[in-house]
Amino acid sequence: MKDIHSHILFDIDDGAESIDESIEILKDAISNHYTDIILTPHYRKSQKFVASNLKKLERFKELQEEVKKQKIKINLYLGNEITVDEDLFYYLSVNEVMTLNNSRYLLIELPFVGRIKYLDDFLEELLDKGYIPIIPHPERYKDYKEEDFRKWVSIGVLFQGNIGSLYGNYGKKAKTKLENMLKQHMIHFLGSDIHKSSQTTYEKDVIQVLDSLVKDHKMSLELTDLNIDKVIHNKEIKPYEVLKEEKKFKLFNR
Image (cartoon, rainbow, N blue to C red; front, side):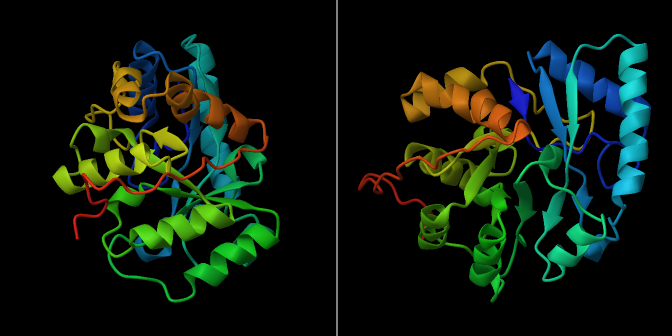
């Protein structure tokens, strides 16, 4: 398995506080069959998580050296989880933020409460400039509706659900929303979004859980491994054909 979203890089944001905690999380990931992890520290001005690429690269090098020293067999890559900001293109130009492993893919976080008026234009501009936006944990955004997500998928935006949501870590509504989005083929990746060593996010049975939801083992592998590998190697990912909402459930519990 591979992880597209994590806060393992130490002393950068609200994730791992020390290199020892980073190593502890990585060892837990390996014990749950993870082979590759993209480190995606926040770039969020509201909380002053604004480490430059230079600082992130310094921490990344330190972590890689410790991984090598301890003979930990895992592949690490670097990126950002970037909160939507009108100045994003400036941040990219001055090396304040980065794409996922220097690919065309950008992990773009929305506000958990409230809507952004310019968001449609912002996403279209990203696509026009050759970037592919990946929106993390859509199941946690309270003020965006099914029609928003369907519209964005139709223009090429991708979505990443949190593994923890499948296990109820973010509440019943988030769990139900993610399950239903998976059933409708609106999710393209699963990620841990792990912040602390105390979290139990790397689950051993996630493939079986996915198989029961999407009824397609190949898709389960794409969500947890194959699509993430395409991001790492900057290969094209085609969005799934979104299914119609089934009458037996309502996607957003309106």
